[in-house]
Image 1 (cartoon, rainbow, N blue to C red):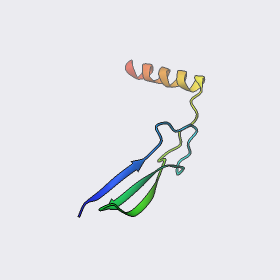
Image 2 (cartoon, rainbow, N blue to C red):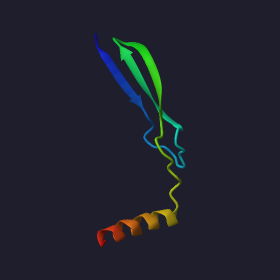
Image 3 (cartoon, rainbow, N blue to C red):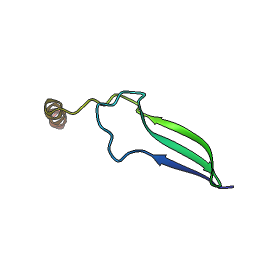
Length: 67
């Protein structure tokens, strides 16, 4: 008996993404027969990346180098 799983997630997911939002599907098959399709959901929020957010993230990384 051969069980296979296929993860279907788009190459890009546009932000913002909210925790619990469906971002793809996990299909589980047994010898070619679909046993289950399970929604893959975001574990946490991912806000739209603005210029200010990007600068803040870079500044935070630099600050951690010197602490």
